[in-house]
Amino acid sequence: MTDIDTLFFRQHRSIHAWLRWILSFLFLLLIVIGGKSHAQAQQDQAEEELPQTTNYALTESLGLLDIKDKGSFGSGVYRGTKRSELTSLLKLVEQSQWQALRPLVRDFILTGADATALDQDIAITPGEDLLTLRLNALLRLGYNREAFELYRKASEHPLDEPTSRTGIFAMLFNQQKGLACLDVKTLAQHHKGIPSWEALIIYCENLLPDSAAPTEEQEKLLSKYPELLALLKSPDYMFEYSPESFAKLDMLERAVLSAQGKISSKYITPQTAPEIPPQDISILLAQPYINDIQKALLLGLAIDYAIMPPQSLSEFYEELLNQHDENKNSKTDASPAISSSEFTNDLLALASIYKETIDSLPDKDRAEKISQAMMIAHKHSDNLLIPLLPIIGELKINTDISIEDAFLLAPLYLYTPDEVSKTWINDLLNINFPDDMKKETTREKLLISLFLLLENIDEAPGDKVYEYIFSASLQTSLLKDIKNIIENIDSTPTNSDKVRTKDTNGFDLIADKGYTMPPNRALSALKSASNDQDISVSLLLSSYILSNIDREKINTEILADIASALNNLGIKTAPRRILAQALMQQE
Image (tube, rainbow, N blue to C red):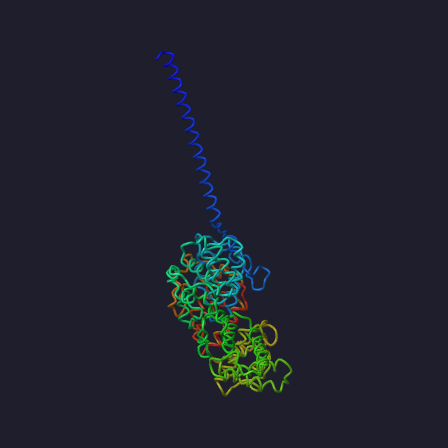
């Protein structure tokens, strides 16, 4: 090979190597670019599948009551409240025995307020945010419809898994199966592997009557929810209700059984109805197999717990009479009673008396009719007389109605918006029982109770009662204590100038339900919160403290502290209603 040939060969080999290098580089570049594009596409798809981040500043501030709505606590109700304290107390919320606080706590939970005004002393975590805690509190209190409405408003925005799950349960408790399953279908893809969501998917897939039985794999997934599995395997399955057995179920099972109308109502009798917890009342009222007697008993409880308005029972009486008129010639009982036929007849008699007395029954006949109604109600439940309360209040004490019966029925005024009977107040001012200590004490208790329930205690006859209270020699130490509390709450300043010693250690010690009397720490925290004008903590602490006290063994010092704390915050009516209830329901 010549030198020229050698040089050409070397140059050619060099050019060839260079070209190979260029081609290799371009090939790798294409792979990298293509790989990046594919990876980016996968990332974009993943981002589309992931739910958006929850905007807590927005969702926590949502409510059903805006600043202009009746019952609203205002948009600034959270101002100055520590997040740690509020979240702790929302977990403890239960239906109090004390009627004055029930609507207050409900309205507080439903108030739309600026959550960013909280003292953010702890971080927000999913399920511990205010919206989720409020939804759960509403369900515990028996306000299922309100929980559903609040969730429906919030569901327009991205929500965390615990919030969505609680909202779906609220839908099911309100028999909104279609909406609930629509949410399950939309959201379940983001929560794969979570047992409750897997169970909800199976439930919604097997919702139709002609759906196939659960597969072996589905049965395995539902092992944690035996009642749901039993329901899906047998269309005729019914759950035998009792407060104890129902409380043991997972919330998912309770919600599904409620939505499907598969809860037996055999348990509900006049004897057992008072044992039904408030969170079960709305659920049982919605069951398709409930009869008229059970509905009447549950409506009475629902009004007591401020779950249903008082007119619900009046409307029921009218429906009952209309149904009876339509079926009176039929031999078929469309609503068989589980107790005695006597109660069936009694219920119709009460409805008839209600209809007669609100129409055109002469005054001279009303006392006799009301006497019959009271005899009937005393056998079953005095709450059945709520629709008749305006007529009862027109009767003359010690003439048309005994002092004992008047005292027995006076607590019904706690459950209704009806103004207390001024006729009764005037009667009680003008009669006394100097030779009967028991009757005289009853008279004084009733007189002061009705006075406390007046909308305006400064107008007649409230002004006369006020003068009587502070001049009379009251019969018992309880009455004397109540007298002092009335005087003190009337003179409590709106804003305390005391040194504020706000408890900064949270409320970890007050969750112990073993206390008969509330721990001193809770009362101390209440006083401190009231002095700091912290409405949120003061209201929830008051409810907590009272929910742990037997109202028949009430300590008047605690009543005084709570009355003073609420009055100090500008809540004027509730303290008086609490005192009235203490007087009327203490043995």
